[in-house]
Length: 302
Image (cartoon, rainbow, N blue to C red; front, top):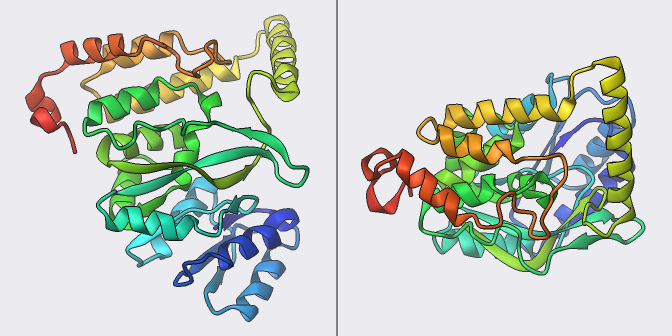
């Protein structure tokens, strides 16, 4: 659990983890130089429960703090936990069953919204339902083809085979969680559950929400201001960075990736949250770009 100024929700998150039905766990909490009461709260829980270990002091960026917690772990299984989230009491138990049955990670379905007020949304079908597909290419294309409003980057909060996660992070830092997600889905087969195990504090972004309409209005206003002030568009800059990271990770798919990013807009335009609803055309394009030997034969990278 990497923390920076998380005092408002930290009690709630720690109680949720310590109350898991699977009790054999260790919480590695790293405070990144908080200016609020986060460190005091963490140290209080460490005195109450020997399973909580606290590390203090600035680690630098949020990504460095995430990676610090990963490197402190010697366990076979590992998960990152945000200080403002909640977990179903059987999250770890279900995840361990799936990992012990052969999956490389367990990605629960999630609910996103204002936990305190009970307002938010979840999908009926896990948005990453394809994570257990035997083809690494299909998993990768389906993941990249999802708009960020699908909340796909929550994949980094899965329960992982720690060894494989460390390999993935060595290839792609969590500083770009979308690119790390792409590396994860292409190099590992996951297990999913449609049951909501994961409650993420945030703003609901489904098409019918007031928050999304407000965000769109703000984006239009912001775009107008940028045109007047000739300032760089942050979405364009972020998209370019994401495309660059993915091209480094998957240099055998430049045309396919560029094609996807050419249609990537600030807001999802389809109800399915896919950038291209007819995604099989992407698969055809990708297969033209590469041959089986470049991707590990008929079973792909898996």
